[in-house]
Length: 255
Image 1 (cartoon, rainbow, N blue to C red):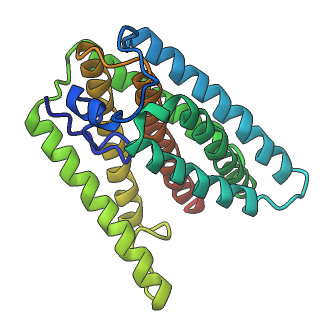
Image 2: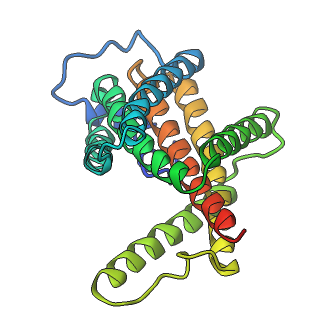
């Protein structure tokens, strides 16, 4: 069965029986009698969320006590990214890597949130609220089959996500070696429009993540895939939150 989410973490074939078997070759630490469940995945997601929030409070506290948060924030982002890559190729390690990801990503989220909050008071609570509302709306639309994840839907979201990633990467590389200023920087209407588009695509990725988790349960994946699915969902939520911060900062700077 094909699972085609382009979540940077879930965009692989780990949610298939054959792929999991290949990933686990040579490993004896697996009990296929323990199967992935929806409630288990929800619980794991809640645990990761709490770890991320607790970790974020550390760099948030550091920032508002006049301490430098750049090092732990950047370090957290780098380590979190590395853990994501490892887990993508070694999903059976997700029970250990997922909490680590939440811990280090929380350092990044807390630091970047404190910086934005210092510049635009009240922006963090608005970004958190917008992310939560978006998640609940998407979950409701998916649960009640108002939005159906068809192959065409997947293809459109995947193409748009890849386009965004390519644009961000090229813009970053070019801006490093030239005086070029990417159009998504600043607070122009074009920049705001791009942020809105990216937020929409990030939200649509939630539907693909929901679909993959549901299919993983139906495929009776091993228990560790609950951590894998929860980690993937957290990655999308972090992406969505960061994009809301960027959009709200642009709107606030125009006042």
